[in-house]
Image 1 (cartoon, helix red, strand yellow):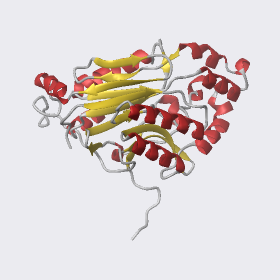
Image 2: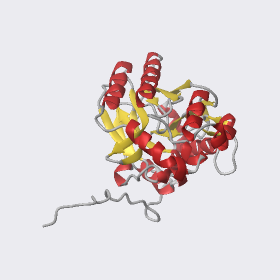
Image 3: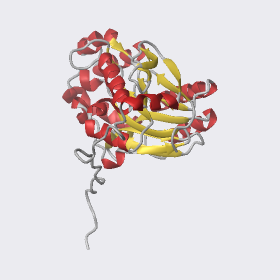
Length: 322
């Protein structure tokens, strides 16, 4: 279904409880229900929210703390069809909203940076995995495949989703636009407010550019690094003396949660500090006005000159022969 009416959306900025699946899921459920009470029909939560984004990959010697923290992350990660997914399903059903939540997804002993989408009736619409973990993330997460380049047809309109630096993947953006995406779900971790290579400004640029290029609404949510999370992260490293980078970066960490219109301008937020929910009402007429100038999947496209191919899924490691 295409977007035919105004839609109220909520972008949730939330602090996970460090490596605690149950406690973080409870916080996610509370936020979903609050957003539902405030009329949200789509609720977007941050990247790898449950049980938490593995911040230590950027702040420590992964050879020293990596194996132990990876084992803990595996133990607390989320499997498809698990009790944690059931809790999110129940919350979506009670809120009467489509829910998109970032999870560390466990498949055997391999983890993925995944998104789960659940409809307003509590049914799982689907999962997608981040296609390419970014830099140090490759020490923790596996890769997605072509099945993760997709759009969901819902009563609210056509929904697409990407995670973090996937928003730099120009062919993927073009593919989602070509599939008719109308509302884009974007998930990020907390980032430093200032930085040379990545910062919350990076998020703002990426989100505004995505909306402007594709003439979609972009609902983007980041985590928030609370002091409790920082203290738990320090303890996992063996204290402040063993992890000076963690303590030095903590005051710099910020959020960037909001909603961008099809003209590339924020219509709600962005929120920078603390746990909060950002709401916006999306008017489909705004997309039509933006597409008067440029329709990247229509009158401004040139598939005769340049086109995008979505390949099939990667083959299994073991397959039966003839």
